Image (tube, rainbow, N blue to C red; front, side, top):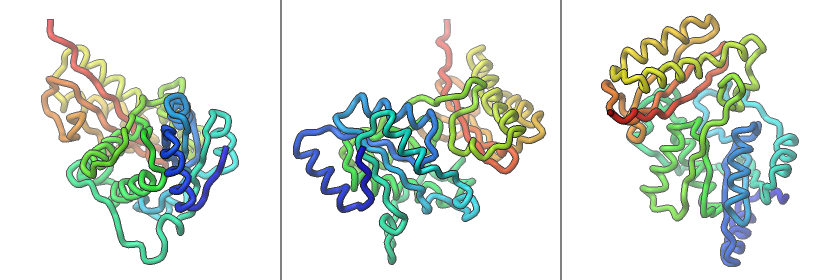
Length: 285
């Protein structure tokens, strides 16, 4: 496994590999790898001639300095995990290389970022879109892999690729969960044992919502209220937002007559967790 730090060196290697006819896949990460990341890396390795993982904690997507400082890092462990699943190249630049002195250029996706994570974390998606656009320019992948756990982020990246006519395919893979339903996340590392026991309440609320939709209930507000009741029954949980949305536009839905996505952001102690469930409405008999 080769580790590359400098953007120019990564660009030159990518261009050479593409000239040789190699198909490149990319999994962007901020490290602290978990099973969700590894599932993306395995898929990338299986579907491309060469698999590339980026390893970069992007300061531009953090709206609070304390959140950036608290983000878990385990570079040595990440390299070992990446090598174990067959990653060919790791692109691991420094912040100064990605955002050199005098940096002024940012990418912004508008409508999709106004609600939910975009409202709770101002500037977050501008940072995400910017760093992903830079990674696509530097690594030049044919395919890039993202997880459904960050549902809004995945849609933002897809929209950016479409709007800017970028020559690659964005592939979104299912959420990987622990045995108790908690979505795999680097932020789970910050949970105390007591908080870890409380955290599956997000999945419990999503399961309740899905069950009601599958039973034929169409009133979104009644379902959201039941989700609130479940989460508020957990003393360590504090809701940021709960939403029932159109799965592509992320606009709120009042009456569920077609597929919807339920979005959650919940504080468990000092750790903010997000989760979602894409739910299809059963066909009418």
